[in-house]
Image (cartoon, rainbow over all chains, first blue to last red; front, top):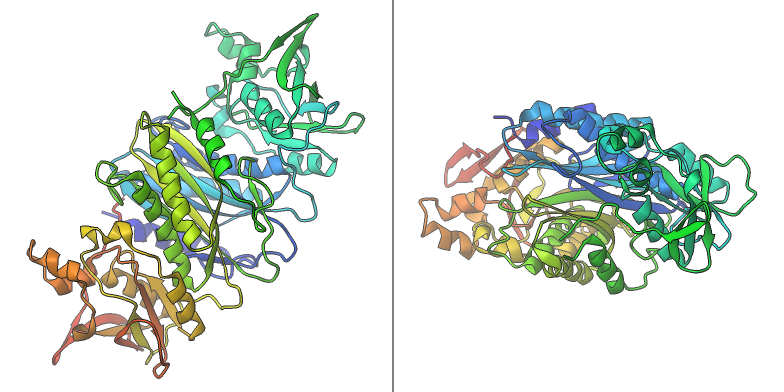
Length: 296
Length: 296
């Protein structure tokens, strides 16, 4: 039966030389020469079989791509450039070397597209289901990172694309908005977040950290065709799918009014009073979060 | 039922101000001001319930401490200083907020002891067993990191402490040899690794990457009292426990002869010919690896 060291040897043979990593993978730690005076952004994200993907349904390559793209999307949400990643995989014992190689290839393909290098990792096997984590290191290269904390009353609220119904497939195949995030940051956005838990949860996160509120113009919220397709199957409206479904991985950001050529569409306004509201015709009602939260 | 955001809120309240992290945890990524001209070392390690710990047997605080200490031990093995960590936890649904808080507290206690700060993470729950990962960021601060690649023929082989039988409890309670690793690196060690998979696997890893071989003096290998206690229960000799058991987390390193005041004991010599051998009285035999490897 193949073992983790067969996999590690295979990974090493895949690696290309780099100016960032001073050492081929396989030591206790990777050694990176971080650009002087550049900030270091770091985050980690895990994917659990049966929660974020289904190993009976999705190919290992698609699973790997999603694991990496979720983290690249976090870089996008700060306006920074992905530089390096380390990953872990807990494989379901008996799945074999090929599944793991395909998963790694998916991660690497997604990383390559954004100039990000996988510099290390840890592999194990167990009787449990698959678990994949990616830790991402990003750099600013001259652009101030955009946090969730800078939204100001009067700012416009923007989203980079249509929302809802990603469960029909887009949650596995989305492309992280790294270039858009960069443009948004350079245009002077005041705050930004990527939509992973759903608009009705992520916008309150942003507002809470900025100490502000928001009012959304219902008629302006872009609804994805998948939300409409999904609504035809269940009893939930397309709008509710757009508001509450998770894993859109579009960018939600705020910017002062009057900045031109911003990516995406204007969907609302930041308010001084806290609380997040929906405005439709003459009615204003509170937006109740229904997006994803892991219960403990 | 409490959710992940209850936990995130609790974590945020724990955090202390820092010169390294420019932002409280809870954004898409943490923002760090990495010291200019200092190398950045990065690695990740996962712990699986039933493989690396047993959630029915071990307290969540002990599990958290081990998760962090395994990574601090990787820093020790490079001679670098732990600076920051990001972590993930997949919790078994229904375990509640307290288990998670205790686990986090264990990680933080271990990190605090080494001046390392937890700057971000990701929490989820599922029907599966517990999974904990820690990504560690280390810095050199003027000391050249020690890899597995520099062992030279004629170098002495050293180990910082007695080996074997850690399964009796030490694998949960060990202290990472960060200060020792630093002293060893400053003394001019040529290569280093921490003993996680067992001497009979980790020494070949080091030799392979350095392109050398090794001969160990059996009578010099320090055997832990736990190895002797365990041998009294099973049919494996204390020496075999010392050679093959994993999770000692002592440092194994090589250094040219004649350097004084090195931590630990001399157990063998690096050879030009590849292969790892045991020397006992007048006999020399090949050391066959039996240490831990995850089968895929």
